[in-house]
Image (cartoon, rainbow, N blue to C red; front, top):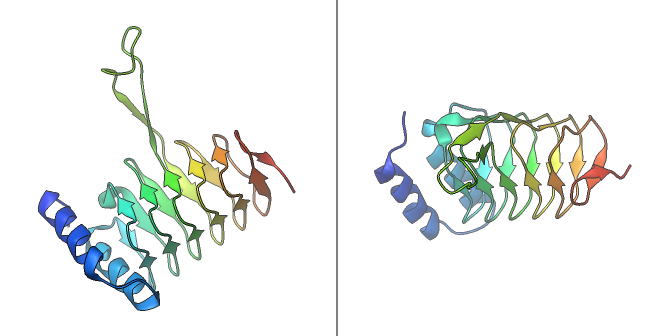
Length: 163
């Protein structure tokens, strides 16, 4: 089902009144589920999370999206058992320049893929075109501009391999 402004507002309004905690997170996930491109079981969304384009979001089973997280435009895939911390930003599009200004340029979209079992810690940013490998950890506050291999930890601005 395509999400229009009415449903977007309804989900935000209902989400405001759903209490925080495991049951509230599960109910928020259930509210989004009909609008997602694909959604597995046990999808949980914390309060104040914002999914800009649910029709472009594919979610596996046992995925958690933390408080105040922003899931932007474009195509984003979250495989099974992905954990997204608080205040994370996944932005699958970038502004382009028109002449000497970004103000009136268009957008360039590139898919984001977060593989099974990855953890995006609080306040990190995942930029367009990035794949986060299976079991990888993105440290708090990192800005990820390039692919992250499986089972590695990255951190920093821009993100680099820590271990």
